[in-house]
Image 1: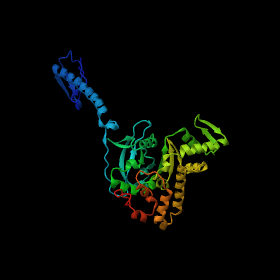
Image 2: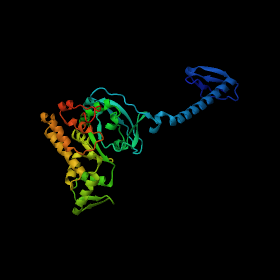
Image 3: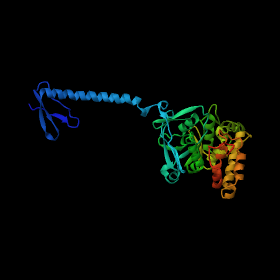
Image 4: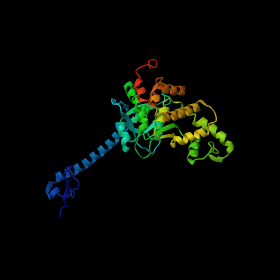
Length: 384
C-alpha cells in the first residue's frame, strides 16, 4: 500500500497532516518543491504532538487577545482615560477642528479627534469644509468627558449634548466648537483663537445654532415652518393633534414666545457675531433643522409681547441689518461710535467674563479698531 505523504508547512515548521502514525514504523514528510523525507516513528509522533501543541498555543493566544481587548486603552471608558493635553498653536490662521466619528446610536459615546488646519485651506478646499457650532455652554459645574483619541477632555454637559445631536449617522464630520477647539486654560491660546473667531464663522460651510433638545413645542414649530403654513395652523403639543383654528393663533404665539424664544441662546453675548458673520446659519432643536431666515420670519409673525429675550432677538436683527448697510462705510466701522452703539444695544446680554462684552463684538469692527483693541485676557476688565 502506498503511504500518504505528510504535508509540512515550511512557514510554521509544524506538521499539518499525518497518516498512519499508530501502525507504521515510520512516516514520510512531503516538503515544498516535492522533497520527501522519512521520519522514524517516534519523530513522526512527536511532530503530530507538535501540531496540536501549536493549535493549543494559538487558542491560548486568541483568548489572551480577547481578554486584552477588555483592558486595552484603546477601548477604555472616558472615565479611565488620561486627560487630554492641547498642543500649542503659534500661528494666526491656524485652528483646531473636531473630527467627529459617525454613529447611528444616539446613546453611543462620542468618539473624535482634534486636528489642526489652516483657515485658508478650509475656504479653498471643498474636502476641508466644516460646520461651526453655536450653543450655550450651560452650567460649568455639570461636566461630561469627551473622548479625543486615547484621552478625555472635560466639557460642559450642554456642549456634549449639542455635539451628540449634530453628529452625523453615516459620515465623518468636521466641527468647530469653542469649548473644545480653544484651550480654555491657556491665555495665549484664547488670545489667538478668539481674535480670529469672526473668520472662523465666516469660513464655515454653515453655522448650527443649537437651541436645545426637541420638545412637543419645537416639533410643532419646525413642522409648521417646513410646511410653510400660516398662524392659523397649529398643533396641540399635549396630544399631537393638528388643528386649524384662527382663534388659537394667539395661544400659539404665546407658546412660541415662551418655549422657543425663551431659549437661553438668545441672551448670550457671543451669538451676535456668530450669527452675523455666518454664511449659512441654521437653527436646530434636537435633530430638526431649519434656516435662520425661515425661523426669523416666523418669529416676526408671532411677536405678541415685549419680553426681554424678544428684545434681545430684535436687537440682533437691527445690528445685523445695520452691519451690512454700513459694510461699505469703513470710517464708521473703524470708529468707536460703532462699537459703542453695539454695546449699548447689547446691554444685559449674558456673559461670564466682562471682558467678553468687548471681545465678542470686535470681529464686527474694522481691522483698524481691532488692532487698537487687541484680544488680551492677561489684562483686567478695568484696564481694558
